[in-house]
Amino acid sequence: MVSNQAVALVVNVASQCGFTDGHYKALQKLQRDLGPYHFNVLGFPCNQFGHQEPNSEREIDSFVKKNYSVTFPMFSKIAVTGVGANAAYKYLTESFGQEPDWNFWKFLVGPDGKVVNAWGPTVSVEEVKPHVTELVRKLILKKKEEL
Image 1 (cartoon, rainbow, N blue to C red):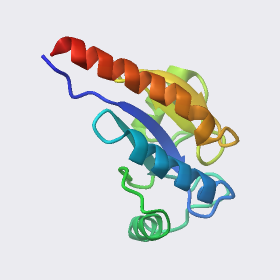
Image 2: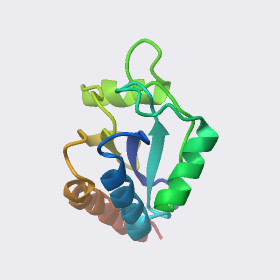
Image 3: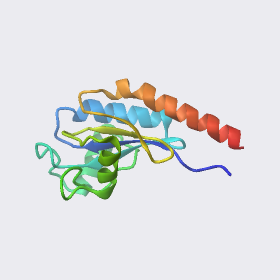
Image 4: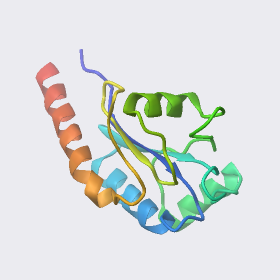
């Protein structure tokens, strides 16, 4: 049986951060290069760090489409740390053993749903890409074996 599982790069995003422009451009390029069949960037707007995502979900959606032509899934605005953290982020941080401490924290999640690695905002998407590409390559080879 062929699985529908994919690799994901889960990112807490913000519209008014110093990392916004470079990260959104690079995340969209990564999505274009590798997605959507075996890979997706998953964007989670978050206003916890420097209040750099004050916009409504509709405004965020409009902003990322207009400025970056974002095609990857964007989710509802959430908390990623602390008591009110979203369940998905609780899982990610518990699995990796480290919480995001700023915007554009990137969790690489394998097709099995396990966190493979994570990087803070000072690590560029370009630096992360080889790790993502390798995981996607392994997934494609595994799917070919299952055919």
